[in-house]
Length: 290
Image 1 (tube, rainbow, N blue to C red):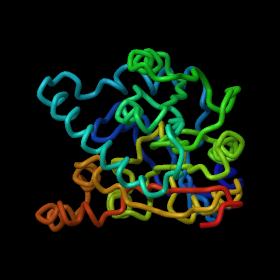
Image 2: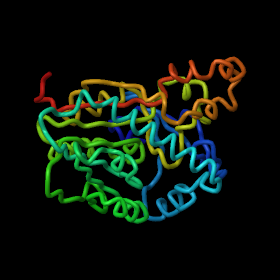
Image 3: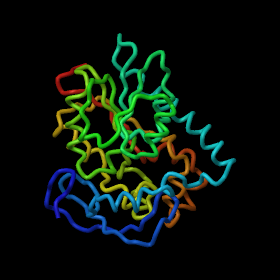
């Protein structure tokens, strides 16, 4: 078995996990989780066919918790706050002296993040493969490239490209990072948010980690894993940031079967801040030196 991240052959089965999305158990199917000794990534052996996407990315995947009007309203408000924090965190790394900044969000979902960008400063552009997501993006009056990111014939270049929890869903993350080299300006910024297996949630939760999300997350890793990907694809990591405010209850659900939960739950807000469960990597091309 070869690792889909680095191609290494020193891999072994290290655990199993069931079809679980966040706190929702979607099915009792069990999947072997392999571990790569070279890049420290965890990965699945699944075929990303049309049948796979139809089965594991159906309407239920996008509509969980939507049955509650209160939850939907609260979640929408919370999401707007988090999107604002997300943008504020990266402000200092954005290219200077350019207005508006052309920002491409890859696999943009419903386009909520792009819609949160002030149009006076940013020109939002989405790339999305899901037809339902494309329709929602169009309704927000956001420029759209429909279809597979790797197959796109982009007619423009960008100042910012972002992958908000996208690359863990693909088997070939290196190709995605390499593709960005040709569409990002030399002084542009690439942003990649990923789950972190060095974080407390995975270390204590293992198979029940909130961000395990098999079989949709086909690989997961830590800083060493992404260091390999960045170097191999010609990127320089200029900053790493913990997105501790995202998924407020992810650590709570990750520890559901851990004997440590009774110790951690009383101090949950503090531990959550320190948990390092997801990481945002901010990158520039290697030719750029700050």
